[in-house]
Length: 536
Image (cartoon, rainbow, N blue to C red; front, side, top):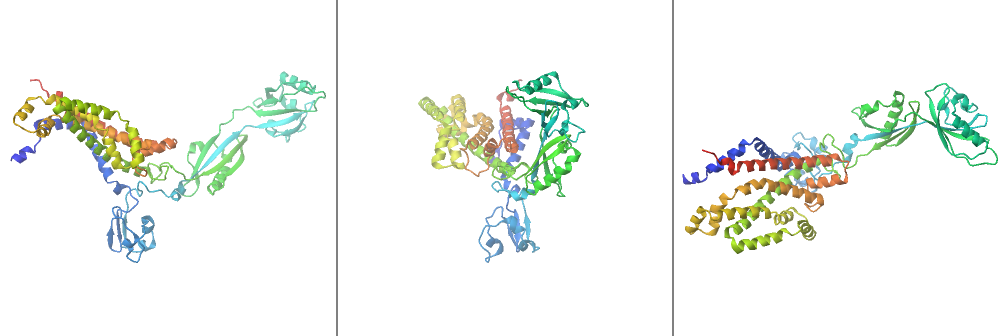
């Protein structure tokens, strides 16, 4: 009966737990964080390039948790080489035997498996750049106004077979300034460059900009003067189309709304160019475009890393060709385990240092405080760089080094609590009974000083997770190839157009930190002494 009664929670502890469970946001956050942590612990069952279960020749194997070779699967006659399970399970030797069974994980990629680029060839696209051109032509004008040597001038003389031999002022209304400029040039006088707008004599909606180059003074008048004509209608801005083959192998535009901007008479020619581009040949052409011309350039976009989300890779592929979803999931497990271990280590070490300082006081407290202040001035980042360069980067080294700096804040709170409680009546009574200092510290004072530790634990966990992400982002955290949110964000800095490398790791980091903060706020409210006071 005594043993059973001693294991029961005190009424105050039960009241605090009930207060915490009444806070809905804290309760939901605790359940959400526990679910995410549980999911991360079974990451091998969700993301794995090795089968979860394999039955070959009547024998059962679990490749996700075993290191197997061909000899283990096929017998002593096979070579002891590593198994390519994707090729092995699709081979005739495996598929021809009805008793063979394979069970894959939902996502058939591990955190360090490089995606085969040929699998994504069906996702390749062709980019089509369309650059509408304005009509530009040039001609020479004789003193009597007759046109000679016209080049690309047909759009400016509608209805005429050729502009050669026509009189320019019969088709266009020339302003007096243009007449004066032409008269100066035909007289051999020096004239500056000139640009003006003229209107067609028959079609007033047709206008053109005329440019005359500067002319120096000449002893003999020229036989002709060159004019440059340019269309003045608003020029359509260049735009781009993207095509991908559909299930039937026919190129289809990814944005049908942009495809509607293409004139119907041009669509057939563009589709032919796209087909040739899918075959591997870069295509260029000039096509008639809404009464003018347009330059068309087609190029096939090859598969390259990083790659955006596609079916089968729902969070995209990183710059090394690895599945982002697998790395985010495995990175969550590493981040949570690292944060929990670091927070527990900081709590234990800070509790020990703060308890000794607060209980004994005097010179022990003063010496401990001065040493703590000196230790807190050490540059943590420089220490991590030095340790990483000398000992290498590993999970244990990072945890130990960071733990030596993360206990300082906890020790301050514990020291203050012990200084407040060491002169209480129950402590004096324990001393009068002759109890030892460790028993008084851990058996009498510590249970009454746990409130700041419990309420600070979630916030310390948040700081540990954020610090790991920052160190990985800077390149001083976990060793290469280790799944990490900070490492994915570091890739996003180099490939800023790869939005999926920014969105999904940041969303995972934000979600975990938000849930942890909500749990911390719930604990702070539940352990608040003011919540336990009732006025009679």
